[in-house]
Image (tube, rainbow, N blue to C red; front, side):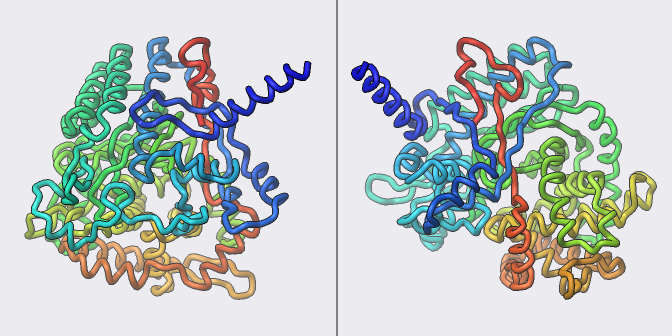
Length: 580
């Protein structure tokens, strides 16, 4: 019996080591542990029971959400497709780890306890994404601005002097060769084996697709993984209109590259389309050309017309992976980012309804109770939150994509500031669109004050993401700019804010003009000045954010996700393939 006890203990010890060691290297099959994430309350209680240390993570800032959706209307083929799409998404997850930090397993083995490991998994590295990328692990320095896209010792000056065509490309890494010189390495070369596996999974899924356009997109996206040519699949993605299952996958956003904003990070979303909600939203896209003409900026900055194929749809998310799952969670998507595709086809705006509802209920409402004036609290509504978020994404299609009178895109001209300005522009032009569509009678739910007050409460929600990300800097620019124009006021006695309507509407016009002009001129120096002056959290705002933290209001959500949450667990291959 004693030998049996020893055997069982040794077996448990080996299993524990295997669990803590993380996944295998990227060129081996990816496995996902089945250990469930604790809730924020459970982990906070566990942390409170420990002696405080300098490395204790702030895991209590996240609250758990089960990610699920109604799949009853899907065909058997579509249900068979979902596990394949989730497996492909998990490959994107591993690739993003390599881009953002490096090998996940080596980091996990070095961390002192399960709480730190779980927090590192949420942040895809040892830096707290919602706290200015501060390290929460002893002995690890600041996060490199260029993440793992560039050599750690490379300077901007060295990069500028490097005479290499395509060095600002979206789908390559910069490394050093055997004699220390810079070299470009395409993603399809660097990550050849995992991308081949992902391509194979998409081709298998394509055979199960009921919708021909979706099958075509999956095939073309699989091709792109192997040749780094993503535009054909972006065009095909724009042509999909009737697919019930949606997949956003690949190297897409450039937020992770805070050195130049050039390189794209791997991510994935698996989504289920809400046909009824999508039908309600479809009518808005046709107004984009008219709204472009009415922008509050000089005529030369609104000559580019948005594509006519732009559309709006609502979805329930069932899986996030990679860049989209790191730190704060995305609740709406506007893609593709390719400027040529945008001008030819427009963009698609995907509203992630279940994720949005979770943030509204668990975060925005408690914030409004603490920080919004009692007589304006009634204007905090989910319809307004949904509309503000949706039109933020639509507004990405307004303005210009290319510098006026120049030969570069706005993204290239603005370098590391491009994302912050673009997010700020979308925030403020979203409100402009709501104003105009209400005037036309196209939006009739509630009243415009709902949008204004919910927008103000939303600034407090988003500002808690910190000022290190593009969205964070955009939030601070907006808050400080509006504060300077007295768009809102703060009651010193109770610490609550109220919208000052006339000034608020003037601030919308003024900030719209400022951001559109900076982008249209490709004014990098002007953007740098704006961010330096307005991109920081002031003392009063920080004190109010501290009040929210002290009240244990979550900063953001994390997901319990995978086949188990979807009711698709089964014996055999997929029984082990559970969510994180």
